Image (cartoon, rainbow, N blue to C red):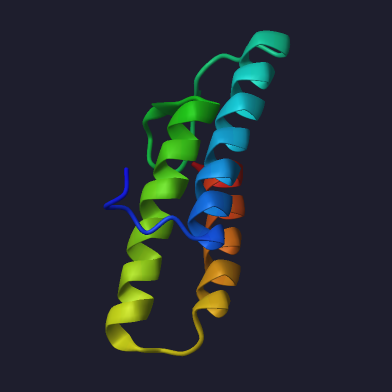
Length: 90
């Protein structure tokens, strides 16, 4: 693993993703849910919506970097708003 650039930020990123997955597993066990239909007209569960959120957030950050819109932490705010919207309406 010496080829990877493990910085504090990288460790925090993967730690947060792991914590989210553990939390979502706890929710699935404690509060089982039935799939629901949102604005996409497909059945989604919490895990599906998490995947859609993570994938969309990756694209938001790539576009933000590619267009050099501004400081990267502002992209995080957009990703958080996007995540809330996905969990609410998708």
